[in-house]
Image (cartoon, rainbow, N blue to C red):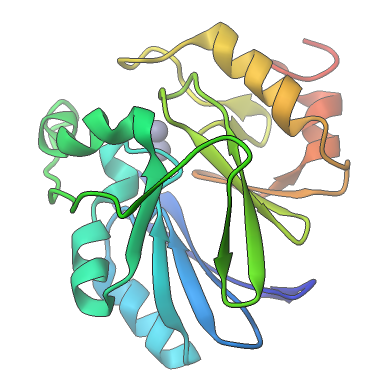
Length: 214
Ligand SMILES: [Zn+2]
Ligand SMILES: [Zn+2]
């Protein structure tokens, strides 16, 4: 998919069907991988087919289903790993997190850079802005560039992330979505960590947890 100067490829990865995004600058062909939960071989093959150079891996948060191929991608490409400091404890607990679901997980390398509210980073000539929205996990972040917002498990089409896992906080999640994400333009395209895309306007109007009617 090519839109508004952003190249976006989507893969559904792992047993929990995480949306992994390969997002690239159309000019330089530098790319970042958002949430490589598993299936590193498929992600690398796709990048190779498309002629993209993976320079960054970004975890919207560090639940095991979003980080499982971090190590493989970073070892294969030398990409930098970026995530929020408040989820570093989760990163270190990938194995035990997965075990509670009866699954296994590959430990991740440590991050190269920690991101926080208002930070920016570049991928080629694209600039991404970071929104910190805790509540699904303490270090949940959303990434905005060119009208596209990658939200992990913060916000879904018609729902929000669960808040019953360790570090979860329903009130923080609701106020973070309303305060930080719903100030974005209605037409902003939202790419959640599971399930279909949506828009900020759609969720502001219709979402039963955080929308106007909640
Ligand atoms: Zn999660
Ligand atoms: Zn998830």
